[in-house]
Length: 233
Image (cartoon, rainbow, N blue to C red; front, side):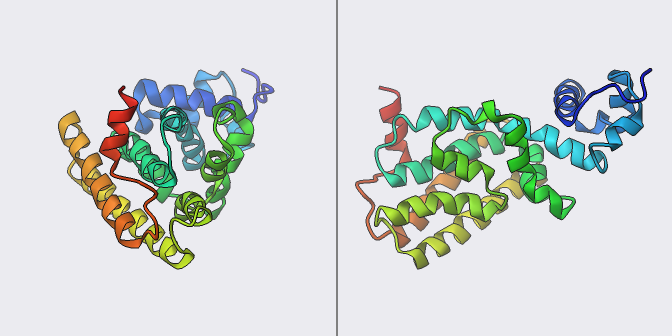
């Protein structure tokens, strides 16, 4: 076994993600990963402070499907509110099916330094967001949970669809609302597709209530069900 094999941070992230997919998060340890990669555990500690940091970076790969769905859905959005609610729709469709991973990524940062991890991750794996629009890249690399949503709020402000003060309220309402939904799904260990889909649409309807109450101009937005119907034509 080579003590230091010339492996880098990215190599370990890729392998840890493979192990998570194969065996689950709880199965991953620094010692087990080092054994699988035929190197010393000390080598991993050159790149990661602890197991939590390694797991956090490895789990960021779980955002791939979300990013793909964003890029696909963007092609049918015709106004800022379709974009705003649509981002949440794409996000909830993934997060509610992978609540533990998404909770870890966005609410269980073990160290302050991990709040910068998303930006670092996409510098290592730029191909995962290369096809995303500039606004999506700004959202995805924002280190704060409320900050990511506010990147979309800023587009609505720029289009005179909402005032700045109301956008701040909308940002707070929809983000805290989402956290409540995610916690409910985790606490009740909800996994069946029908119930997950119901929670997605319940969240979207609640989000739309906030939008309609705070928007200055709905720009013709009639509801995300309409957008889904349009995308199926």
